[in-house]
Length: 326
Image 1: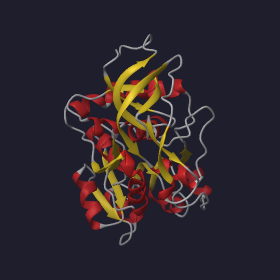
Image 2: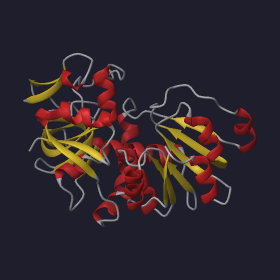
Image 3: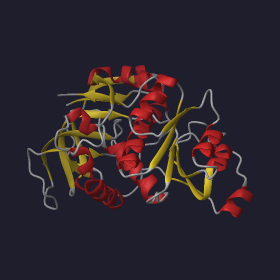
Image 4: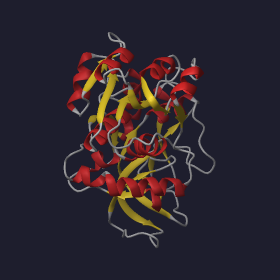
């Protein structure tokens, strides 16, 4: 099969087309003929040498795919050979065939293309796990999404808004702010021209927000603490602003604040099975009803994975960057 491998750590050009053996599905795994794969920030970090591959995972990049089931162990599923699924994987998505734990496969939502379906797993699993499980966003609570037009941001805004929450977001241009508001954010804040803690406080009558989904960390942490309501929670999913920041523990104590974080890739199949079940129950109906829609910025052929990574690093995209194989 054709695949894209990381020949050495470095710039996007280190991504090269290669020939690999088709992977063999083991017990509990499904073999998928890949029609499309998502490009995500962790893929870039892996290419740069900052995101080690978990033991036993494919060294090929790619954490989400959609395609046709062509084999594997279907004994514990309702799937059949020939069904179309999207899947969260630990690696190997940039290839014509990929194996995925059956527990991490979901049916392609009705009405979605394969490219749209492939854009879902990494972002939707991440958002549900962090916003609704770890940070416990509950009825009547508010959410601030940092990086509102990233793949994660687009998913978080739409899911939380569709479930009835007030959502605010930050973005780096007025165009991106308008896009975030078009997806359901009540107010998008241009972090280059506005101070988001002040805007958030003004929008919440001085209370602050209940949950912040943070992919920046670093210098944002003190500003986020100032933006939180009492009993508020920060869920950190990336460290684009650095892995160190000042924490006013006096506020943490007095106002009962929580700062938490997680990475999804190394978590167990059983953990991801539970998220998959929650998504199918709560989010897949919203997709099929058209209340949430995938936002695709640009689609590249597999052979242009390097261009897809360059676009990801440039940061101009709104929504997902995808690879199409079929």
